[in-house]
Image (cartoon, rainbow, N blue to C red; front, side, top):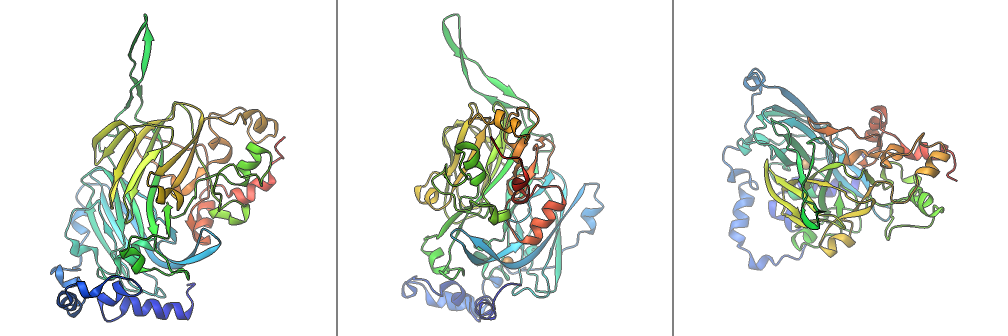
Length: 464
Ligand SMILES: [Cu+2]
């Protein structure tokens, strides 16, 4: 528990204070005189929004579903307020599921029963809840769990797709604060019959004529998750509801971090021969001293089926685009929405699955093609193949025994962008520890086999 006593007092007042309106209006520039004060007062008198949903917060019983013949997948989360870093060397007062932002990714197959258990440690400053969009059941079941308590519900994951889950606040009060401070994640529900093979449109010249030359790729793919959100913070690192109401975010984050997937000093060294010569315009998490927060790159092979699970967790639209690539297929739910499209729009709480093949060796930035978002953090760099011709040097230095089809074989892919394996997953060659994690979560990742590059890189032979 890392809050100062003063911060606890402020948060306590915010979260448990007497009115819903105080929570939402403090510190912001909304013109209250133009709002219907009676309605706001009425909501206040009712205890926030709780009574707007009359069946609110009933108990649920998992017994019937547990014996229904379906596979039961347990999903255990804790609600924890912690201090986490932000770009520029400062920290902010984060709220997390299980000490990480985003929370752990749940992966199930369509038809499975999800048994979600939320535990709030006794020392936690506030209660929390969990609304899983993969469920279809009365919102009353999402519950509010107080410090020292545990609660659970079960549901059948009936629809395939990528679905948000998020804290529902204290009986909906402060939900915005909890989500925008870090309490969100995704559930991936794989289609019961698996994913479809991918068709990529190409053309060829034969007998002097240009013709269609469709390429087909097996359903198995190398998979990543990308979750977009914003931070609305005061200079002291507290949630600023006023900035949220004004849609004036202080940061755009992908998987919790601004510019978390851009080159670092190791890539500078490999490409430029100098750890201090930045090869990307913004490298805020450059050095090894950032440990699990040091930025990493996403490595893929050329001519490889890549699948991205993308979710807009935030308060601003995401215009998802990959500079230099075309999104070969966009799926929402289990329905193809588009093929061979340049950009796809995700509103708030909207997810999609992007399937694509990186045709040429190179570096490709996945962006929210809103310039304000790009410049405040939504630039995520994929490196396909060996565009920098590093294979001979890495082999000479003994880092890898033979040339490799992607740098993932030498450095791994970042753990926070790698989902749990599903029925059509290609295993990543290696996974490194990267993410907006507490040190405890980072240690657990290392214990489960992810590579702490900040410890390994200094021990590697020098690159010639
Ligand atoms: Cu919460």
